[in-house]
Length: 231
Image 1 (cartoon, rainbow, N blue to C red):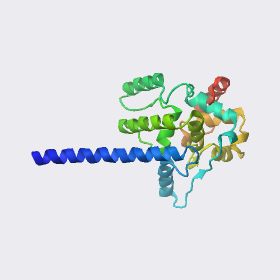
Image 2 (cartoon, one colour; image 1 turned 30 degrees about the vertical axis):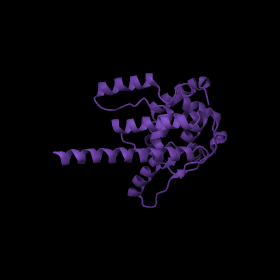
Image 3 (cartoon, rainbow, N blue to C red; image 1 turned 90 degrees about the horizontal axis):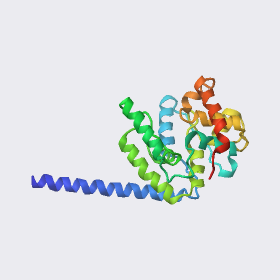
Image 4 (cartoon, rainbow, N blue to C red; image 1 turned 45 degrees about the vertical axis):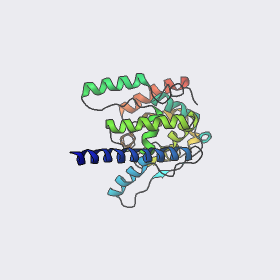
C-alpha cells in the first residue's frame, strides 16, 4: 500500500509538471503571436491530416493579412454573428454560457458551447475540434491567457485570419479569394454577411450556398452589422 501511495503521488507530480510545461508553451506561443503571424494552428494541422487521408497532395489555403487589410464590413459581420459583446467581456460571455448549458442539459450532451471569439481563437490555435468538458476547461485557461497577454484588436485580428471557412480554407484572405475572387480588403457588406453566416458550419455551406438557413442568417447579420462595435 505504501508503494502504491508513493507511485500515486509521483504520478500526480508528473502530471502537474506536464501541465505546467504545457501551459508555459501556450504562454510562450501567445507572446510570440503578439507581433508575429501564426504559421499553422492546431486546428489547421488536424484538418490537413484529414484532407490528406483522402488526397495525399492536399494543401491548405491560408494567408495572414494585417487587420487594416480586412474590410470593415467583415469585422462588423463577424462581431454581429459570433460575439456581440466582444469588446465588453474579458473572454467569457456568461449569459451565452448559461444559455448553452441549458441547451446541453435538454439534449443530454454538448450541442452548444456559448463560445466567445476569444474562446474560439483559443480552440483554433491550440486544441482539437472535439467537444468534451476537459477540452472546454483547457480552452478556458488559454482564453484567460489570450485576454491577459493580447489586446482585443490583436485577438480579433488573429481570429479573422485563422478561422476555417471551408475545406482547407483558413482566414479572411483565403475565403475572400475562394468565394468572391477578391482580397479581404474589398469585401462588401453582403459578401461579409455571407462569410459570417457560413462560419459556424463552413464545410457544409461551402457546397450549399443556397441553403435556406444560410440566407436567413445573412439577413439577420446584415440587420445587426450597423450596431456592431469593433476593437
